[in-house]
Image (cartoon, rainbow, N blue to C red; front, side):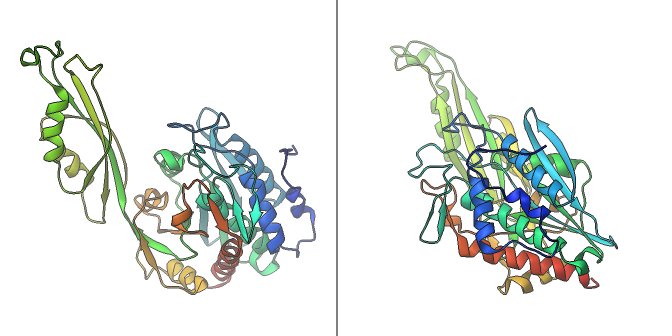
Amino acid sequence: MEVNIPGTHNLLELARQDRKAGMNDEQIARLLQDLVRIPSVNPHGNPGTTKTGEAGMVAYLAEFCRKLALDVEIHEVEPGRANIIGKFMSRGGKRSVAFAPHTDTVSVAGMTVDPFAGEIRDGKLYGRGACDTKGSLAAFLAALTNAVRQKDFREGDCDVYFCALMGEESGNDGARALAATGFKPDFLIAGEPTGCRVVNTHKGSLWFKLITRGKSIHAATPEGGENAIAKMAAVISSLPRGCTVTVIRGGAQTNIVPDYCEIEIDRRTVPGEDHAQIVSDCAKLGVEVQEVRDCPPLFTEPGNEFVRRLEVASEMPLTDAPWFCDAAIFAARGVPAVAFGPGSTAQMHTADEFVELEQVYRAARIAERFLRDAGSAHL
């Protein structure tokens, strides 16, 4: 089935070209425009648009991968929201690596540029997801396209998975679903804007809700009630180190003593911290704990052979990050994983989100060098 998405280019014809032909910089830019022009806003919270979900991206990417002669599987995670897995099978098949960028973006509410135009100005491509993380999607697809057209790579011994994952922005749902199937490549690269550096360690994140309850009464006689907000104020002042209160809700109207209050907490962690212990410490404050969602910290050994080869290809030293991403979900199940991709964290989730195209081109070249090295060298 042909995919016809208004406003996109006919890049799917690339796979019909001579097998030695690869994607050049102009084609990579056009591919990224295609991806930005396909809305894939995460529906959680206030998306700022009715164009939510990853269905359009799944359709486009599935067709792109099929035209590259990859084996394609689509795994629905939530109704209308799926992961897409494309697999290139080498002749030898002794090892496997996975590219794992996510397809969802954050809300477009408040954006000052057209979120779905893919406008190019002064070497920058603008739009929601251009930086986080459709730049990585385009770079990885270009690297894979160019690698599989080379005979020495096809006849090597490295299988490659292209895993486009849903739901990263609301709790790593796509990564969790794929990891739960037992998916275990020898190495995984999560696509994130790292400035083309390799992130082998990052903070974890623990999200949870604390609830206090009281007794409602007319505010003219507050002594007869029990103020849940006042209780919560005492809880907040006693929270364990590092807990950041990001949302608070409570009360019905001005003249009623509130019988309910809740706060939401974002607790960033480092390797070695116990998430269960953090929750337990908060529960000791006499509150209810609900809706725990967590992403563990990431630490992948810098001496891992795949990490070293990607570091060499990037020509920059390994680095760390304060944010979390899908890499940690796979690492927690024993898959050596890192984050890598074009773009700056300063442009993630911004009103005028953009990515510098030179970074996207560079990321594609690095990823291709890494693939060809992994496919030909004896690790």
